[in-house]
Length: 88
Image: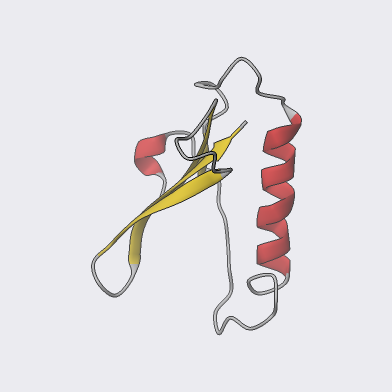
């Protein structure tokens, strides 16, 4: 997992990263947040986007007034890479 807090909009607030980390911890500790996953969730930070299977970033706006989106890449059975883009 990689959180891009370098390429950020001017309105970015450093606590956004902390909020994301708390949300990820919730998923780790609660087996997916609701206890219904059949596997353990583990998020391990990496230094670069290229190393990550999950990349989280922020943008100023997204067309359609959305709060964010997720773009996934899979081999048909498992996720290979996920981009999570959030509006500041």
